Amino acid sequence: MKKLNILKKYLILILLNGTNFSAYSSDYTYIFCADRKSNWHWLLDDQDNYIKIEGKWNYYCYNGIHFSYFIPNDSFNQIKRLSRKCIEKFGLSYETPQPAINFGNRWSIFALNKNLFYQGRLSVRYQEYNLNYTKIIKLYNDTYNLETYNNSIEYNFIGLGNLYNSIINNIKIIGGINENENEN
Image (cartoon, rainbow, N blue to C red; front, side, top):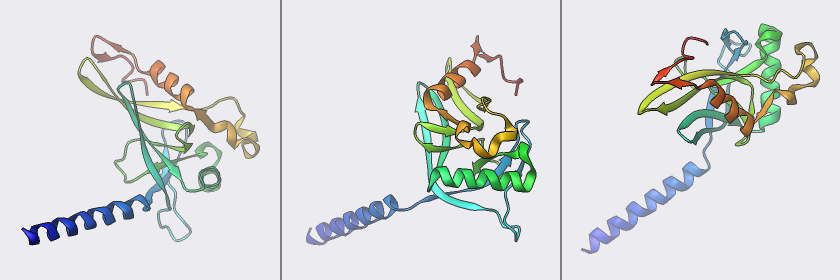
């Protein structure tokens, strides 16, 4: 019995240490640069290595709507830096950096925090009539001019309320069939 109690204590200690350690660990993502027509290129450094940054993957889940987003460390400056690198490498139309873990990853977006998201394409998963759907939604703030981009990166962020409304407006189900499934 005494050995069992000691074993339990060690097991609890190991679990607590593992939990404590993971609380301080960081996620990572690779970057690709996308235009508004769904064309994209991996963002590589000067030695042709994939650029990888640290931050935290998060998942939005509300009212049956799910999507993933990535908050980089030093989020505003990091997103701004990545956007400029995308423009330098691929041109102004590829202004939007997007996070991805691998080639087959769904479209995710960057965020400053849990309430402010960067523009891009987003894979949204939702359920209607017990059927699961995925819809790719274009989220761009068109209140600025691309030619004046250098001074207006803050206009590329979209608030959670506007993001949610855009998702709802793009998800239209009629009789269990996604009427928008071939639009994008």
